[in-house]
Length: 328
Image (cartoon, rainbow, N blue to C red; front, top):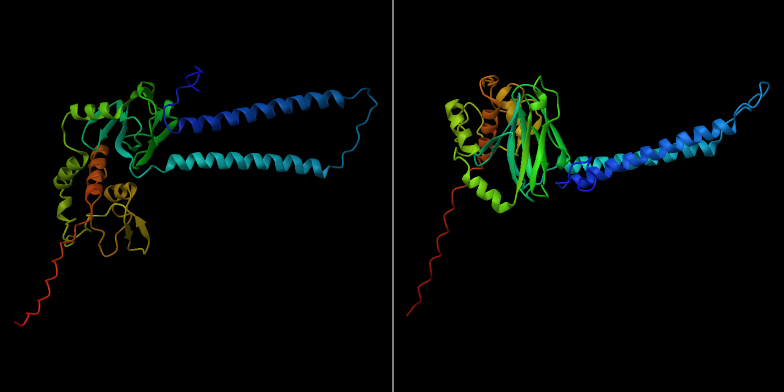
């Protein structure tokens, strides 16, 4: 649509077409009923106008068919809109498992991005063409909102939470990136660009970036510097539960509830460890709220996610059965 209608941005992601189709359906539906209602009002005003001062209107006792018609038709239209909108919403809420993760932090008044391989960017985000991309979004101060018009995606960056946004770029180029939430006096200057590169060009760009260590490596160093390693030992003998293989698993709490170890759970466990106490452990962990930046928090989460389950020691091969000596 953006290529032919200059008032609309380009369609440059897998969601752009479906969002536009739903939007224009709503516009067309609104225009149709607006014209229909105005025409009926004018028609009835003329048709049933009062022609002289002594004229008295006829009483109306209702019409079941008419009432059913104007009830069932709007209900059907509302259900179509609900189903269509819900389908688009759920598609945008479930990133594929192979999506490339990039961490994004909103801060007055800039966007900071960090790739899992360690490359960092400010107000500019490089992504490969045709590759699903998942943004893990946080905020260091107030509510911001990542908005990429050409991709038709938007997600708030909320302090104390990790929100996610995903898309698949379908067209190479440079696209606007805005903050869609008023965040202060210089909110309008909190803009940037998303640069979509061909896969080979993106790999070249990654290779040419500064080598600062991956997110997981930086998070591991932070894990040691904050002395987390003294309690979360891998041999399960620490005062806190081991974190190896934790991400994505089910965690039983002292309350009997079971939660999934997502990014949001890891964040809460770091900044508010008393919120969910793991079964079998005491509430001894202090809060790290205010002691660690949003960027450091995401690096810690990246490190914990990178710790896979401990590999089982190789089992010894069974000894070969003794052969019966052959009598000569």
